[in-house]
Amino acid sequence: MTSRSWAALCLLACLWGFSFLGMRVALNEVGPFAVVAHRTIWAMILLWLYLLARGIPMPRGRRIWVAFAVMGLFNNMIPFSLIAWGQQSIETGLASILNASTAVWGVLLAAMIQPDERLTPRRAIGVAIGFVGVATAIGLSNLRALDLRSVSQLAILGAAVSYGIAGVWARRRLQGLRPEVAATGMLTCSALVMLPVASFVEGPIRFDLSLNTWAALAYVSIVATGLAYLLYYRVLSAAGSGNAMLTTLLVAPVAIVAGAVILGEALPARAFAGFGLIALGLVVLDGRLTGRLTGRLLGQPKKSLAPPAPPG
Image (cartoon, rainbow, N blue to C red; front, side):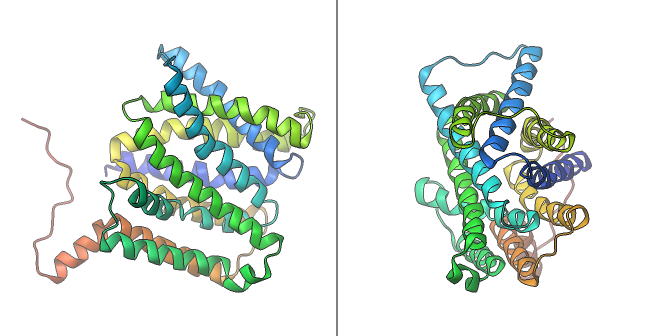
């Protein structure tokens, strides 16, 4: 990747890493469903303004809007709600570590559904290491207790699985669309559903909130969702999906440090060990580093890391 792509990737990791902190602060005054409603509504408004300013049209067909609705369900409504609910009982850093397993679930689900995404031996090893990391981070003894804390950790894992399903759905139903159009469509459907859901479950959406809560909601909706989606798709187009997956590794350390410095959170040693195993699993899934090491061990020439020359 170019230095510009690396800078964008690190910025994106910071935006998403601090989103865990923002949701934790907002949850002190607002219910989890209301947090998700605010997050999707304000992000939706930002992206619609972006499309209008750029003169980008939205599709009107019923089938594509059904696809947007399904994408919004699995990429916004379910995972945002599960993460917000889970963060009421567990630390922001631990939530981000469990969320880092998204890529592991994505590879496994793609292998089960997509005929051209078979589970090769390397991918199988990466998935297995990732699952061991998840089990280590949670602690098997905590799962046997099945208290609110352990259920909250399972909720975060449910969010990671939902993100994995969304990735498969996007590939099957949203290919060929401009990324900002797809993001606007799914956020629109998410906001239209989450507003009545939050009102029904937690009462009418409140606007008489403290300045800290409004700042947290503004961050998670406008910065960590609306702007982050636009930045993510730029990274995706410039650096490719393999490099974009690296954000999953970079988000967790940002969230861990933010939780420790600002909220005074202290994570158990097993959480860091679990994150290390998840990171190792993602490195194996990515394959580039392990491929280079294998090539050196076999005496193959080192490949150039310079970007390819332009054609002609």
